[in-house]
Amino acid sequence: MHEPHQLKVYKFGGASVKDAAAIRNLCHIAREHAAGAPLLIVVSAMGKTTNALEELYHRAHSHLDYGPQLHSLRAFHYAVADELFGPTEAAADEALRALFQELEDQLGALEPGDYDRQYDQVVSFGELLATRIVSRALDAQWLDCRPLVRTDHLWREGRLDWATTEQNIRSAVPPLLPRGPVVTQGFLGGTGSGQTTTLGREGSDFTAAIFAHCLQASSVTIWKDVAGLLNADPKIFDDTVRYPEISYQETIEMAYYGASVIHPKTIKPLAVKRIPLLVKSFLDPTAEGTIIHDCRHDSLPPAFIRKTGQCLVSFESKDLTFISEENLEVIFGALAQVRLKIHLMQNSAISFSVCTDFSAYRLDRLLDMLYEQFTIHYNTGLELYTIKNYDAASIQRLTQGRDLLLEQRTRQTFQFVSRGA
Ligand SMILES: Nc1ncnc2c1ncn2[C@@H]1O[C@H](COP(=O)(O)OP(=O)(O)O)[C@@H](O)[C@H]1O
Ligand SMILES: N[C@@H](CC(=O)OP(=O)(O)O)C(=O)O
Image (cartoon, rainbow, N blue to C red; front, side):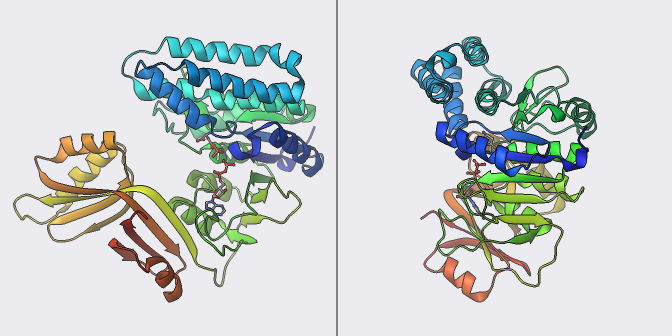
């Protein structure tokens, strides 16, 4: 039997399984690059399937016609299966057929309200479908992660029960590994009563870290469409540079501030077990990429991060009383209750401002809870920029010509909120 510490965990996200050619490339990488080590592969939904499922769910829940959306989701998955296995084999694929039947049944049986719980039951099909197709293409074992990755009932953002998850994974996975690669779903979990949960959008990186942590893997590789971890998103910024190596600490901060290449929860489970995280390009798998591990840096080039869709909310006391700890307790309590996360905050004598993601629904609930106690103003359509390891030139480069609504700096980090371009 293989020693568990030789285990490699690979994570393939939406872009790396977006069509049949991408899945063939995944199979090639799994065969060539794992070098015979036991391999656990975590797979996300194909391409933009999660967005499509969100729309489908929203329509079904709102009693709108969702037939065309369901049809195109089915057609897309079957077209990929046709191309990989041939039309006859794809049409006869029991697992795919059963999943689409189950999805159709779920959509037909939606109940009013209970939005977040039912969201998880529907949106989770993206990963279930993708892993069925990938495991078949790779002739690998398909593993349902939901009975293993135990969460609470916080729908759409399930919180992990680490002790139970570790116990489950450690008993279920090692016996499978000697038989060949195992393919499982990212992003999904399950409650003790067997209901499906999701771990938060883009949470598949976190799933890879959960399995690696529980099994003391030798490394995790997340295969992306970029050359590694760069100092900025190349889709937004010019002249990006790749970090050949970077510490867990630097990476966790970049992810926290919004570098969408890695889900922020991914780093801690790996850091505590000193498991290196490799970010590599599925387009150029032999290229070096980035290794994230325990290391020190004398200096790093500034990293630029942009978060769009932000909203700045300011609370003012109505009677000129100072913003006190008691007031803050009320504001924080309400933000937590409506599940708005603070990305930046600042206070003055009688006013307190927070920058959060914009959600009309959550903001309305927040206003309802607090309008009697505070005068509340808000701006939407904003962007939050962060420069880590900034210098004067990088601040100049980013702030020039922008209308700054709020700015803040610490020794290492410069942040500002500005109106969207
Ligand atoms: N600092 C960064 N370094 C590299 N890529 C980044 C960075 N910040 C954002 N990105 C973006 O992350 C994308 C890859 O992440 P993502 O689309 O979530 O992959 P997947 O869906 O395969 O998990 C890249 O195409 C790039 O546009
Ligand atoms: N499919 C989920 C989970 C995920 O992590 O996806 P990706 O690895 O493609 O970012 C989402 O889109 O949110």
